[in-house]
Image (tube, rainbow, N blue to C red; front, side):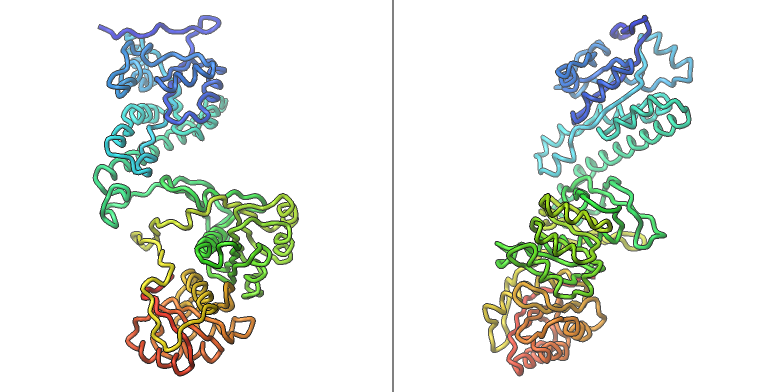
Length: 536
């Protein structure tokens, strides 16, 4: 006995209309897509919520139950799992016996499948309860997508609103080879989507996803990233590069909006990310509560940083750290760029300016610089979070927590002299900046302005000497921060000889007593943080 199905719908001249099945969790763009399909002569078949949304938009829809002859069951858990649906998708168009079988059963072919899944990943990221997560595990959707993708020569499949334009092009393309390439690409995207979806569910059920596991690091690490853009080039012009966005995190570089300038490269984005991280960290300082932080980055190291009452003053103070290195640098500010700031920024050749916003006048002024890129970063919260950090090594990955140690909790002052209030301001600022300088790192500061940086040297003594050498102003009465302990007194002595009055460092060396004695001999104040800030 055959299952009863709806009678075929005829077109204007009695022709059988092609069918498209639409079942979407996200309704973004679905009405427009269905309207385009209807205009191409398609009959739309849709499941419950999607059918209601399309009918509300004035689009004629045939319900799934009308096709299957069977009502939805189990609160919608069973609706599309039926031969009248899957037979119409899986029948091979070039196999007469498949088409004859459809005809015998009264089943119409389905030539377009547009499905996106229940939002399991979003529910997982939001910390939904187990019972709610189980309800977000889609069964029918992945089955439909896998069937359509398997039969891609005859069926166009779309798994995301972003796929709808390509799906329409695949239907309209007159060149058979080009149409075939489009269909195959869409099928590949469909299988990638089902694979990622199953991975997220598998990781949760097995307790191996960060959201499900009580372990710091899962025994199996599953990653999902979507290609967002191909970059201008990699570290060097001969290297290709691309930007990917996390499927489970929001904010950061992928959500930046480029307002002006040529395409970005791999190095550009690394520098912007470094600049935004430091600018976000400076927001937590008392002195920054009513001010603007400006950061200059060169080759992923800070070449300048300052906090001031206005964006212009912050930028000028940051540039003053090292005017030579600021040339061709990347600048980030954590406040809006106004016209006075824009005029001052435009006076220097810069690669990129990133900020949460630009006033219209500032934007017009900066757009006169054709080689300058402008990035709007509307939400800086991603840079203050505690997500893991990844690094690739040959044959594997390294995973670690972010370095979120900011204050001087548990600090000790081993020297006879205590820091003054003014020195404390500089020490807090220097300690934040040191976190963002490559080891070995030494930074000198006064108040909320960076004065000198010694970065990435193989010995701490060399970093001390370099920080002193790079300073553009006398360091008398300034302070310094060291990302790790001083193994010998010589580095501290080099700083003291230049006029440094107070130092903040982790402590913990077997020669701490020797270093403290050297500080006392020069009347330096010293703070032990008890934690280091290595950055490799």
